[in-house]
Structures are given as structure tokens and as C-alpha cells.
Length: 95
Image 1 (cartoon, rainbow, N blue to C red):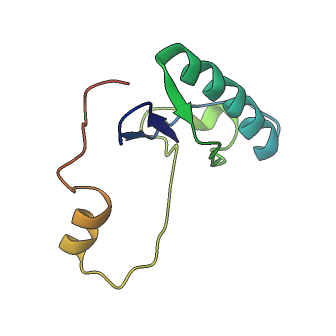
Image 2: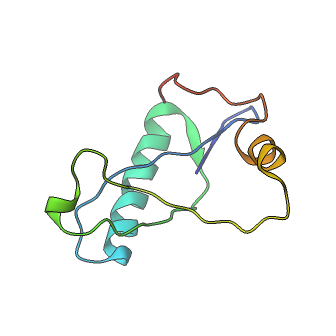
């Protein structure tokens, strides 16, 4: 998770790492995140998560690369508005 310097924008990135364990994947991702933050001038918030995809053959078309399950009392429309469609997102603009 990254925060834009001097503004209140936050960026989430999903990256793929070949690693022997989740801990190794996170360590590699954190190293790359520090490099990315320095290169584009944002702050890395030291928050990384990992999701085990499976073996090399598992990463193909349609492969699930991330999943998050959150419990909520909100209805579907309110949930999407609260977490994903607030109107402040800049989607499809690249990094």
C-alpha cells in the first residue's frame, strides 16, 4: 500500500512473485515496493499481503491472483459504495 506524497491518494498494487513460501514472497515484494516508492515519489506504508496461487502451472489465463473476504452488515450496494466505488477512485489510469 502506498500514499502519494503531499496528497491523500492511496495506491494498491498486486504483483506476482515466484517464491518458496509466503514469507519469502512478502520479503521480495517489500524490497520491490521500496524501489517502486523511491522511483515514483510515493510513500510505502509497510503493508503487504500474500496470496498463495499454487505451482507454476497454476498461473494461467483466468487464474485467481488475489482474494479478500470481509464480513459486513452492509447490503450489496452500500458495501460496494463504501469500499470500492466511492467516486474518488482513479481506475484504469496505470500506476
